[in-house]
Image (tube, rainbow, N blue to C red; front, side, top):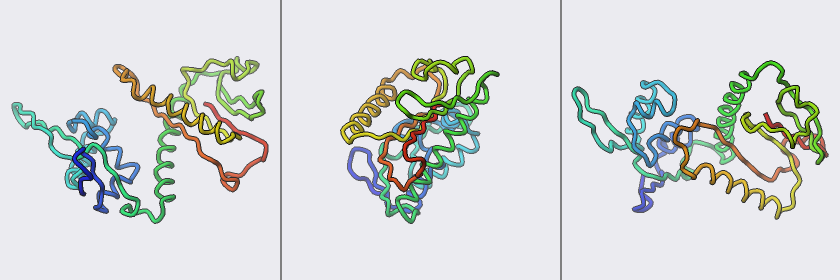
Length: 233
């Protein structure tokens, strides 16, 4: 690894390090230490994994040069080591990763994230009370909606249904003018930044958040020509 500049940024040149950081499962283990300080126990608790699992990954990241010992806390018995990432920002050039194409790298990363999201969504949905089911309807704009909800809302227009405490998953094919797509993209980014960076996280519950907007080639996931599908859960 070589430092890009003095602002604690590193450009990765070691294939072994690149393989670790580009692996969607392994890279999550550096998150408790990225531009922050943590112990093995604290990191394991934050990630919800066994201490032995986190210790194995910490030792691996130390060997790769991704972690450093930031300080040693003395106490009776064995001292406690605190660790921190060796840089605040890492950049992994695609050509150093083990993937044959950039598409292969992206698909692996995205598929893993979707698997984690789907599993969490399924667990949450399994806790819903009796009387819940699937609603299949067409909204006033012509889009076909398939979403979960209580039977009592069967006659309630989707836009008037209040489900702010329910898990949300939406997939939709929409037709937008370029300027409208650009505006939507900006508004989504602003909304995400508002909730991620407002600092009011004390006492909160961790959530998974995913928002995406991308031009859809006609050949990708081709379905009925005039049907939009959304699936809020």
